[in-house]
Length: 171
Image 1 (tube, rainbow, N blue to C red):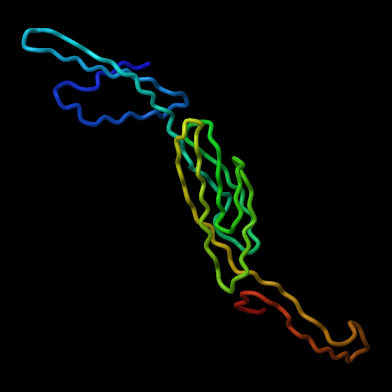
Image 2 (image 1 turned 90 degrees about the horizontal axis):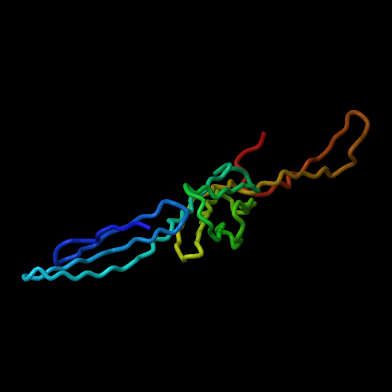
């Protein structure tokens, strides 16, 4: 418990208290007044400062080919107990602390997903962090041969490219 005089004078103003620990902090605020005759009166109020929550997270990669699997890790400065609410920007969510997620992109170009983590403590303290993930377009290499797969030399085949997706080149 911390005993901190809140103010002196007629106008208390604004005070901001922080709690970077993992436990609640109770602080007593005291107002002492005095009149011209030397009479004194005081009042105390206790306020509770809940621990600050932190939605910081890391990812094992931020860019890659479709499908892209990413491991997410909630990485707070202080381990305050929280509930996790992940939104991967593709209709999928998770309430795990450290989820893994597969991003898929069937567009013809790269797609950026905004991943959001919202954490909330039992005291109702909330923090939100977002980071982006870039997933290159879906591609699928396919071809067909319109004749038998073996034959005598000279052996002629006709190959049809059936590849799909955001293809930008062939080798």
